[in-house]
Length: 168
View 1: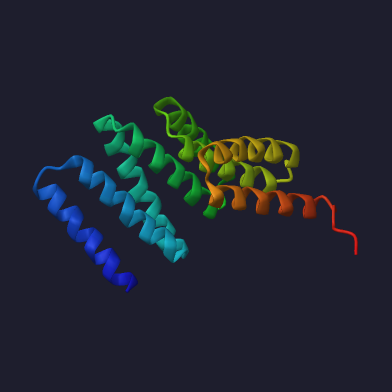
View 2 (view 1 turned 180 degrees about the horizontal axis):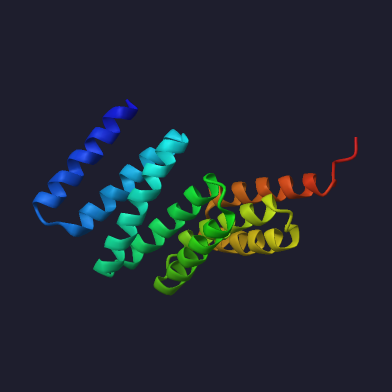
C-alpha cells in the first residue's frame, strides 16, 4: 500500500508539471516528502529533506504563505529526525511566524507543541512548559481535543523527567 501512495504522488506531480499548475506541484512535492519521511531511514529522510527544500522554494516563489508555513513545519520535523535541533527550531519559528501572520490558529498550536517537544528533549523544561501552555490555550479556544491530549501527554513526560512521579 505504501508504494502505491508514492506512485500516485509522483503521478500527480508529473500531471501538475505538465499542466503548469505550480501550486499543485508544490503540494504534491510536500506530500511525496511526507511519504519519504514516514519511511524513517537515513536515505529516505535525505530524499524527503531535499523534496521539502524544493517545495519550500516553490511555495516562496508562488507567494503561497499557507504552504510555506506547512512546509516549514515539516522541515522542522525532519530536521529533528535528522538530529539537527537548531535547524528544527529555525524552521518551527518560521512556521509559527507565518501561521500567526495569516491567521491559522491550529497550525500555531501544533507548531508551539513541536517547539515544546524539542525544548523538552534538551532539558529546557521551563520553556517547554511555557510553549505547551500557549499551545493548550489555542487548542482550548479552538475546541481541539486531540491537541489538548498531546499537550497533556507532553506535560506528563516533562514532569516525569523532573522526577515528579505520582505517589503510590
